[in-house]
Length: 563
Image (cartoon, rainbow, N blue to C red; front, side):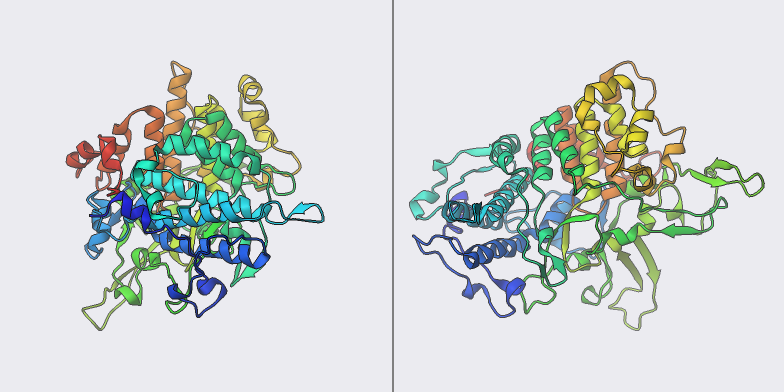
């Protein structure tokens, strides 16, 4: 059995992989090894070290998605799924499961600790600190990695200095931190770097290297959200979205019906998951061949490929189907006779060419099935394509994730109208003034400051409109009159939870979103109830998994075994 001691000592010496990102010939034996008094004081040192950390990130890229997705309620495995994946989904993964290896996270931590301890931060050129940008990026990598450790393992050994001797790897020397403790530590650690710009090394392959880095303000928002510091979280997200010269309106990409007879669909949604989409904020770049290094295998999990004989291993769950199909689609169109705008929704009894077209259209935009005759019984004739995994790289942050977390933070900070506006209308000055009460606008203050010159109506929409038509015209999609402010917050949080499902299904966020919302409520049964309905269908909720509900009602069963 692996012990925490082995987990730590296995990464006691920092190593930098140069891999296929900068060369196509180096292997693990070519890593640059530790020299005790070596200072990182040249551009080559810091660039290679930073790319080496990116190389270590490749190791955990697939599991970042799979651990967050397969344990949630939106994805179901097929009979062809590998046993390792089944064990993750069933919460039975042991220490021998290849996706459960804390050493890989600590390898990143150790490399970051070494970099931060040895980078020559005093070196200046023309009055500018030469390595300030790299230093900030490495602090972000370390904080993000520790966050992954905490949400996957619960409580983990915590150290911020490089371990350089075997005696220092004794776990009794270090405290164990849970997610709240880790979040609070790194909020303080990262706050001075909130405005530090990314280093720019140009393009590596077809990717802008700046997209390898997680935005500092977004991570600070995430950490505050996990720590229950909601107004601070909302402030960090707001300031990222509205930064002068680098603002981020929602955009208007959507998939929707084009005519009132509901016979034709226009889709500008699926393209938002390609590497060149401006919605993709952070990518873990992967190699395109095993010769160069580590490749992602997510495509083989979610798609039919030659490598898996066209037997895809994961698909949308019954719970996701039910949620998607239960949404009300609303279309605003010009009446062909009167030429006046009118609003129409498909009848509940409407027959569709494909039942996946019922309700919200995002699922059918992302997942497609086709029959293809096969000459071999070893190959599947039923073939799935998942547009979210059509790239060799692994996306871990999109713009819509930031907006949804902003809504979550606004709501928990006491501003449910503002949070709901993110879902229904989008945030621009016109919509804020029109749809959020004066009292809440006054209380939220700067959190609702969106420039009328950069956040235009033409660039803004509610996230729900990305798949459910003109959500701003849906008279049933509202916050009802409720007895208390707490009731309104809970109602809106349920809507945010649903929108997270509709917008981010398959992206590796769901289990962690449910975990965080359960923590907000102090109620483990919220997560347990959602996951127990993973395979349930119909209003009678058949196939409800009572045993899984019981298991996950105990928080300790949310986490992977660390030793």
